[in-house]
Length: 130
Image 1 (tube, rainbow, N blue to C red):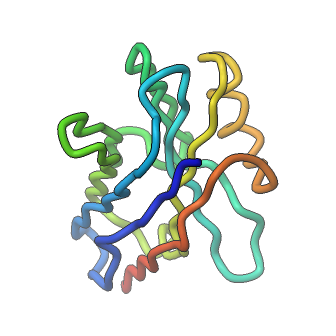
Image 2 (image 1 turned 120 degrees about the vertical axis):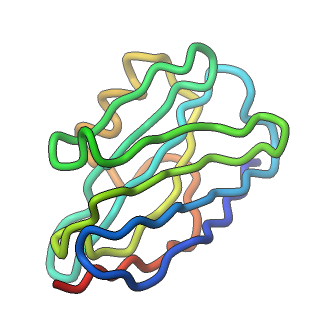
């Protein structure tokens, strides 16, 4: 069973940067999809970025393309999300998630923003002030 623990959230001004980390325990090295969702107050959870562990395929929501970068540190079994040029609308609770899926299923999961699937961390808050 995969367990996920996020860290790295905080408060920054618009234009600043943060890096989120997700430490994974358990086997995530075969046919696993991992990534980040976020949820702002009053809004539904949405997929932000994902990576397919087998081949490194990535997906980014249009709202974060060019600003966020997802990567993995295999040695430390850690998922990273580098967030640059942050905007107030990026303010949300960010959740790390993982599931065993095909590469196509991985992309579809994050496009759909389905919060009722996979393993989840407890979340880390990101607040961006203008």
